[in-house]
Length: 451
Image (tube, rainbow, N blue to C red; front, side):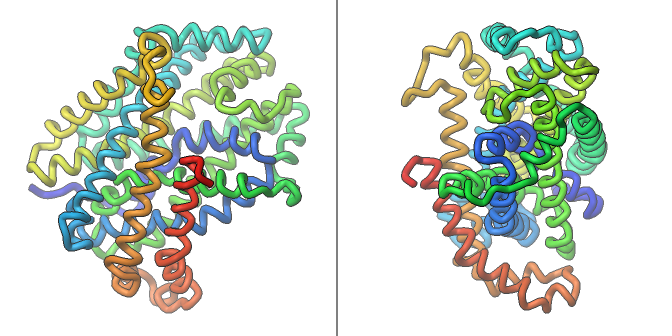
């Protein structure tokens, strides 16, 4: 059975950017910036992105393009043992678990988009009203499960159409719309009174605020933002042609992902500062603080719709990419037709996501290690499995396969000038071999509370 492939390099760029751009950019990035000193965190984050995020991203895409296989078989071929096949399989399982809890959270986003369209997100007079409204929604089992199912039906519709007609075409449509909506919100934020205070907070760094904890949080954000460690980029890389230039394919993804993070922060902080609210609202920023802000600004109804449409589109493209490694594995391993693989994966994600969708209501008193099902899945993946997946990939490339072989393979399709650039080749060698593995260990230990 012929495997899927991208029709062009731009198809990969849009799909990979769609995978990378998600809740980590639009929801998490603004609130961690707000909680960690503003502009100085942005500077540290960008440095960490070059030190850990981009090298691991390239290594995973390289593994996929070299082997033309899904993660388990790809790791086995380069690692030359069943042990490495097991490690590759762990990344597939990670992506499957991520897609389960991600769908439950994305269901809230879809639900809030419907709330925005109905006009119920622009009628708040206080933060308490916004919080009460949020609680009333997530405490409804039918609300959570219904939007969880509806969201997955949308993902199924894209995935069942295949790599080119589904994932690639879908991202080529969704990503431009996402950027258009984001830029519209940014322009609205910049037009508000006191928006300059938001820009100053975001782009005037105070170096005295740098702390070791800030550095570790920036490392973690730079690692998670590119959808690495969960089999996605190995799978997407396997759909590249053997002579596609990996560096020129991956670098635009890095730029697009970073721009979404920065634009999202600009949009959020200009809007928040315009009404004199504090930027450090934390995770409640999306569902409680911003709806209150939308209730206070001119044109808040349309801004609310645009904002939650933006977050929904980002969640949709990320969810599709999280499910694809499992689908690719079923097709490669069992030679299933794509429709059957997508159907089984979708049903499995829905069932595994049910406890997450019910974590705020029916199952709120059911805990494991003092965590409800959603918190447990989030902790297990983000703190343990995703760092391990990225670590496996970079160790496979830098130590098992070996940097000389990896770089020679990376040079395929690359321009002569870049192939012979000593500084760039040293950057790859140093990051593959030493810097990225060491920083991933720090991210892992920090997530576990050891450091």
